[in-house]
Image 1 (cartoon, helix red, strand yellow):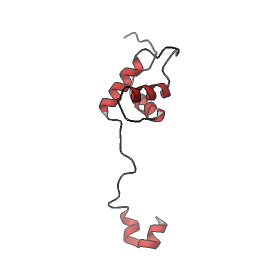
Image 2: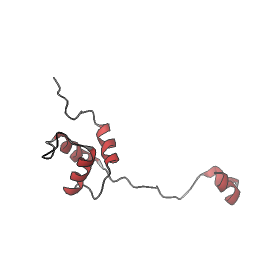
Image 3: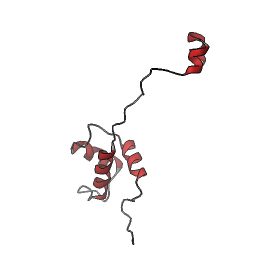
Length: 91
């Protein structure tokens, strides 16, 4: 902000950044999130006792649900759901 004030003046500093594009575009839409949750509820790959975030990210890309996704995005998507992978419910 200080640099913007010095270079562009008071109006530019107070007005914020007008006309700038967002730094990233959200790739994980609702359909992808639903597929990811369904995948995480399924059986993990052979040789693994449970799904890891990296395994889920790799499988989602391999199945063509999304072009590329990080394990951190997978974590955020699954954190939003109320289901818990692996827990048993009575109800």
